[in-house]
Amino acid sequence: MKKILLSAAAFAVVAVSAVAVAPTTSEAIPAFARQTGAACLACHHLSFPALNAFGRSFKQGGLTDVGEQTLIEDDMLSLTSAVNFSAVLRPQFVSTTVSGSPVVTANVTTKTVAITADQVLLIGGRVGTNTGTFVEIGFGGPTATGGFANFQLFNSYDIGGFKAGVSIFNSGFGETAGMEVGSTFGQHGGLLGGKTLSASNTLSNNAGGTGGVALFAANEMFTASIAGVTPTGALGGVGNGWKLAPSARVFATVEAGGFELGFGGGITNGTTANAQTAAALVLPVGTAIKMKKWMIDAQIQGEIGDMGFAAYADYASAGAPGALQFNPFAAAGATAANGSLKGYSFRAELKPIHTVVAMAGIGNLKDNLTKTAQWQVGAEYEIYQNFVVALIYNNAKTTTAATGVAVTTKTTTLDIEALL
Image (cartoon, rainbow, N blue to C red):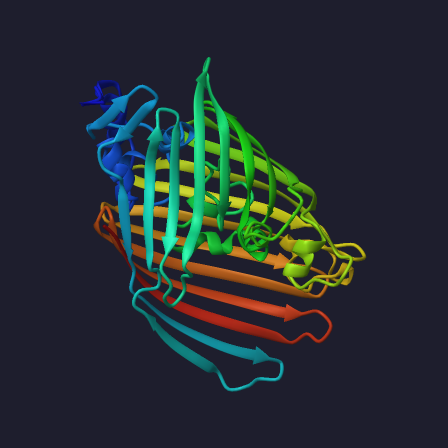
């Protein structure tokens, strides 16, 4: 076995170029920075975890690129000399006020402190020449549960001018987590809690975690994947007959007028799991689990003058479940009477100075019985590239169609997040 230092000249040139043209970025995952030898701002636009072109390429390549980190290499072996870990350090202070109308009740305010809000260890990077991983291991605490909170194992190969491969995943990032490079929802939509506005993200969260197997192909312009997916509840040792619902996703980026434009869509439509899984999910006997959802998304990233700028939007719809059907995307308890659950979101972000990012956005989601409209503003201050303080205000109003009763929830969050 021999230990050699991988030559990283080409990688360094790309990384330096990315740093030169990209706006300064907020926190990223130090595990990947250690592996690549590139600053956090090499992969992200404005703030973690939104991806720029270099970040998308790194992910499409299976998270395997290395810079100056020493490799241990032999026949059928190519490992970094150290496993790349990151610890999440995240104190969080939240104030929530709930009020209702037309029958107005006294405002009920709850103030909570979570130190820490996440007790998570991140492990990511190169497993082999063509294989990489990103996992989050939870250790209990206020919001996290033990075990794998997120699991992604990528295998990516160069085929002509494309990268193509297969990934296995079980994640809270949604049904597109097999290979997702857009920044509107899911894993890459996290700036200032912005993905909480996303209709697509909300529908994915209704299903809880989602896992499966995806085949993908990508280049600098297109990323496409076809996957078989199922709710996480069918992946925890419960027999599901290996029955997965088909899911497809495509995302494209182009340069126009000095901006990077991205647009895409996705669809999931099929029956998954079996009676054993339905029983594990405490569904009525004979219920079929039908995963039915489609979505479109768009984004723009670039600079206006000396300021970094980005805008993100999406529209998503989860079909109404039929008789003795359960659509996880339509939320637990949804029936044919609810109709389809659909909505949209839009948010914009601006980085006026080197260390500050501001965001504002709206979200709307409704079915036949209820409608939720929300708006959100926030700002974050970068202490370091991997340490930010964010203040976020969210106002969500849910109205019941039959009664006209509306409940408003106002949430203010002070989020302090450092990644070691």
